Amino acid sequence: MKDKKINYQKILKYFVLISLILTIVFLVWAMIVAPSVMNPSDPFARTKNDYVLILCQCILGVVAMFLPGLFERKFKIEIPSNMLILYTIFLYCAIYLGEVKSFYYNVPHWDTILHTFSGAMLGALGFSFVALLNKSETVPINLSPLFVVIFSFCFAVTLGVFWEIYEFAFDGLLGLNMQKFALEGGADLVGRAALIDTMKDLIVDCLGALIMSIIGYISLIYKKGWVEKLQLKKKR
Image (cartoon, rainbow, N blue to C red; front, side):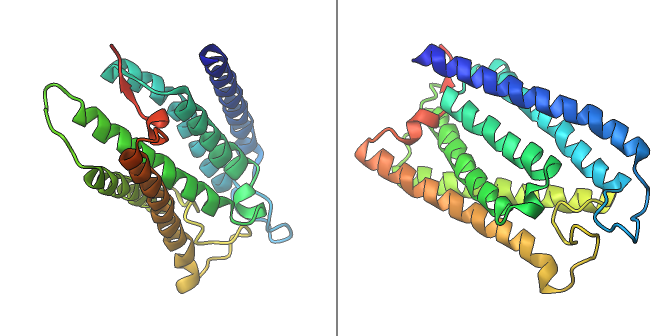
């Protein structure tokens, strides 16, 4: 069964990687022929700036595909196949479906679902870091389940905040619309409407992290082993 899971994970990885690379090639061509400014007769046609956003996301997606392998070699850790599968599916849903196929605009609550899912995944990652530290021979400590849960929750929420800072910074630097402060047609939102996407993302990040923290706490107290299946492990 383990070999089958590893094979499925690799097949999924190469499928997503090839999809992103082919998209990057297409986007480079599309940026060459796309207009620089919006056409009033077709407000939904993509401009060069629109393709810049998608291209940046796809390039980051390709880099992100190689990060788990780099972390495994650098820090001599083993990432469970289940976590890698979830990670790869998330990248595909967020970048290829979300940005390239415009699911963020065309599928209701797509962004909300992904942020909730990412909050839960980051919460599980927080459990992994504490578990690795707790089992370290160089730092002999024994942490209570409540502390582990609180740390995991704060870890996930903090990374969620960093992501919103990244979106805000690159929206300003490159004229992008990752924080969805403008409609797909280019019209800017104002007042509270311009804040809704960012605040909603932060709220559901907290919700996803809280759900994972509760599941993790129950798993630790009653030794269910639910979160442990997603935890990083030191290579022997």
